[in-house]
Image (tube, rainbow, N blue to C red; front, top):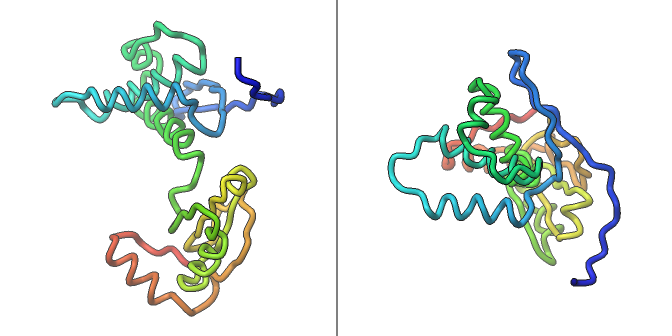
Length: 187
């Protein structure tokens, strides 16, 4: 056995509800485990034509549930039947995506990693009139993000530099959004 050290952390859970009275509490790790990511990747590598978007989402949800609830024989049909509504399937899939992206909000304009990532994030935030931020878990990996604007997606992030109110860069970000098809939701 390798000498990994693991500290006991209180288990966090997420309550997923569909608005129709159905809910489930799922262990939330803040990321996928290696085995979860590997199983999802292998599923997509083995895909054949004719798989619907809903079926693919259900497979990802099933893989996560097998792991988190220690149910190795759980199948897609059981998950679909018990989830029962499309809003529940959508919310469960959003949870899987959240774990997969380590809960980096989709409002992130830019994500940088490396030795110079902090400086580059600050400079990018200045140029694009955005906000350079990180979280403790990301900072240990030298990962920094830039948001275009303020909002609830900043919860849990430490703001390093805030240029969101500056006029400099507004035309640059507008041009960027026109090129990429993304809308700017500035203040």
